[in-house]
Image 1 (cartoon, rainbow, N blue to C red):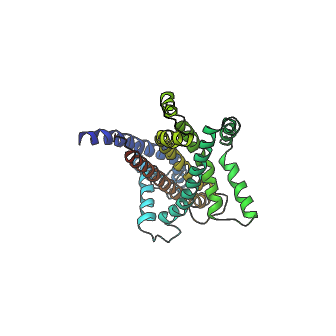
Image 2: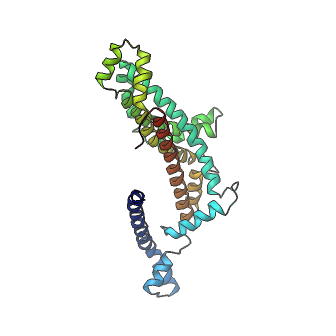
Image 3: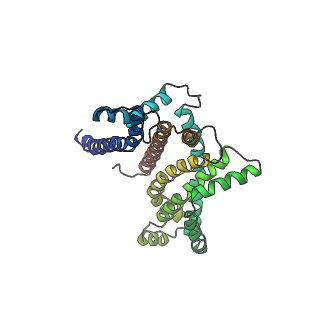
Length: 292
């Protein structure tokens, strides 16, 4: 019980501090517009009344936490799941391309890592290009991918998932390379002493050693995959998805809807990272690792 409190109290303290800072920022950013409204109406509200008005604007510059929470609750629990305004529906649309892109990215990253570890030429030739590819802004690549695939008649889930693949394969490849190279020289020499083949060294030593690195990199990759899916929805003119929700809200200055969609995306990302972490612990325990 004490250990649980030790873990929860710091998190709640930081969260409370962030909420307070959020309220302060909302008042400061919404104050100029509210002063202009009061001046036009000929009103001179008191300090507390003025603060209350800045925190209850229908289209604020920065919505207050309670406004975002109310909007999130309404669009999550009080709307039909099939409704285009439902955050559950929009999150599911984005999640589908996220998971597909994450699966592609993980498989591609592992294949690249295996090739880099076993082929020196591939390490020297391919790895620098892989690193250089991540310096290109995703906002520049996404429209190009969407347009090219649309020209050959491929639209919908596949182009969006490829954007997620682009962002997710890199951390998996780097983490897996580190993991496959993590066994100590002494262990590799021992395998050679027992006359182990290259495949036996790979499956019995390198792969088990790489599992912690793989799942650690997959946590980063799944969050990056979600970002890729959201970004991919922006140039496609998508009518559903978290990215589409953000885009439509920005068109009509619905800042509360925009922040609510961001919160939904954050929750989805946290759940995905948690699921990957649980899967990693289950795999490690099945391989004989001691629970932390």
